[in-house]
Structure formats: structure tokens, C-alpha cells
Length: 484
Image (tube, rainbow, N blue to C red; front, side, top):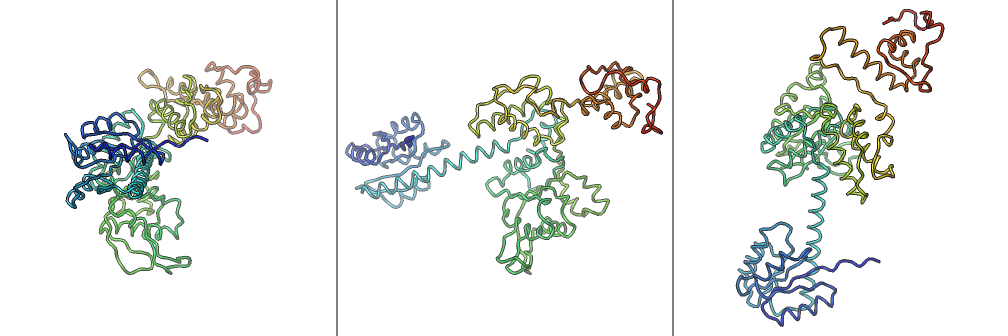
């Protein structure tokens, strides 16, 4: 069984007898003991000792006294807990030490049980604080926005300009583009960063429960309301609420959200009392709210209240240059979290991933990377390891108009690319491809010959058309179809 790490405790006192006495007590209890005789030596030891957990610090010291040492320590991040000790303790000194961040204050003569109790409590708090710091670091990494594409740089500029204000933000973008990450980044750079960030997925909550979820309810307000419930808006009071997929919210609920935005007021279901809240609202949607508004599905007044600062979350296919960066980030992050060896992706694998049309955007890419790390044995992930749909995908790119002189040339280049993509999608099966693009098989063969597209023997169907097709005759299914 692996031994648990000994907690490192530094004792700073100019009296050698005190240091010896505490050394005997602490080492007997299984702690690692370190000592210093004055304030300057203590600061040097603190600077040099890795993983120091606790400092027991005398107030009266030669050179720098204990309060000065404590003040110096608190200027740096992630400092250990401090217990102050003194033979001339006063309430004023104890209050000053507490203001500077001391965990506790003990008067001399020191009593063994009191010292050990105080030390254990201080170590427990130190452990909790470090765990919180670690969790915060992990959360920051988890919700990090990655990208060097100009569209991402523009988005960051807009976010940083918006964050310190209380303006309502509406984030547009397809599913999987990271709208939640944008909302969290705005909150983390706002004046409300130390308050709560509350997320609500409006599309995931049934219509009959959405009002209760957002505004809360009183006990007995409806069947199943067995106790009073605090709504999401009240939970976010002082902080930020993120209303994801707000385009799926009913008109009735929209009117209540409008009231919060305009008046800062919420009313629980089943209550006549109105409560004031101070909440910043960030909303997101993958729908065209202007169109929803015109069709009567979204309130015009709410749209204008939400659309104060519109932000666009770009699709992954619009910023393909960021794919290698994202692959590396997801690979390292997932490997670190699960104690896996970090795997690399080959150049061919990255190129295939760049060509693929990521309909699920960054979320789909993240899932694919994690799956490959789990399921691939080799240290380098090759193109052959990628899912079939990524390896076989050929994207249709519109030809660059700068290099094309005639409309006919443009049309032919686009048509050739389209045919190649459809053949690849259908595993080079001519009949299936012809059916899908609604053209006779004979016509598709003519197109292949015209564009110099060759299909190797053994892949899909035979290369040569049938004798019937060679004569230019059509199958019964092709009657009435366009022969292009």
C-alpha cells in the first residue's frame, strides 16, 4: 500500500526550546518538520520548500516580525495556512493577524492537544482550498475557447469588450460550436465573476415545467409540488444566467422572461409575491430568431431586449485552419484527465479531418478525438484509424472564380466535384450514385469519361457500362429523367 504524503509544517520561532518541543510533538504525530529562527530565514524557507502545507509563526521575531512575514506571504498565490503564536498576545494582535489571513491565533504556553487540533483543522482547510483551486483550473481548461482563426480573434475582441458591462448578449450559432463556452468566458471576464453562473437548456425542459424551473414555485402550486422551489433566476441573483436554445421557449414563458429583463422581477408559480433579482442574461440559439419572430413563434419585444449584443459562434467548417490546434488540445486534455499517454495524429489523419465537413462542429470533433484515443493502440493515430465517414469524405468546394474565365468552365468544375463526392459517399457504386443524383446510369458513365474519372476494378461496380447502356438505351426507371 502506497504511503500517504506527510504534511510539511514549518515552525518559525526564535526560542529553540519552543522549536524542539513542537518538533517532538509533530514528528511523533507523523508530520514532516521544518524550522526557522527568524522572519528572513522563514521567507527563504517558504520560497524554497515545495508543497509546504502549514506555517506555525511566532509574532515576535528578530529582523521581520511574524505579522510582516504573514503580510509578505499573502502577496503570493497558493500560500500555506498560517497559525500565529505569541507569548504576549493581545486582542488587537489577534485581529490584525486574522485580517492578514491567519487561520488561528494561539497563546503561549502552548498546550499539546490544542496545538494538534488547530493544526489538523488548518491542514483540512488547506486541503479543501487546494482541491478548489485544482477544480477551478480543470474547469477553466474544460471551458477554454481555442482558435487562432480571424473569426475567433474577432469573437474574442467582441467578448472582452462586452464582458465588463451588464448588457444582454445573444449568441447565434449551430449546435456544437461552443455557445456555452462563449457565455462562460463572458461571465469569467465580467464584474460578476465571483458570483454564480447558472445554465438552463430551454429545449431540454418540458413545457409544463419550464416556468417552475426558471421562476420557482410554492409548495402545493401544482400536483407534485411537495415543497417550495427556488427558480434559476433567483439562484443566479448577482451573477449570470445562460438561457441556451431560447428559440425553443413558449410565448407564455417568453413574456415572463421579458419581465425579468425589463423590471428585474420574478414571480414564483403559485405565489402573488414579486421578488427583485439582479441577473445578467446571456441567451443562445441555433435558430433564425428574426424568421421565428416574423412567423409569430418569438416575441418581437423579447427579441429586441435580447439582441443588444449579438455574437456569432463560427462553424468548424468556416475555421478549418484551427482543426490541428483543436485536435492537439483535445488529445492532451483528455489524456491528462484520464492518465493516458498523449497520442499524436499523423499528417494524413489531420488532412482527412480538415477535409471532412463537421456537421456536429467542435463537439463532434472532440468526441471523435476522445474515441480514437481510447480505441487506438498505437502512439500515433493514422488515417486508417479514423471513422469511415471521415476517411471517405470528399468535400465539395466551389471553384475559385478568379481562376475561371467562363460560366461553362465553372459549371463543369463544380459538377465534377459533386460527382466525385457522391461516388465516394456511395462507396463508388455507380447504380446507387446514379439513383441518388437522379440521372441514368449511362449518363453517369458518360460524365465519368468526360471528366476523366476512373474507377479501379474491384471497387464498387464494374468499370464498363452494360451493352444496353452502350447503345444509349435507358432503363424503365430512367424514363422522364434529365439526361444531363
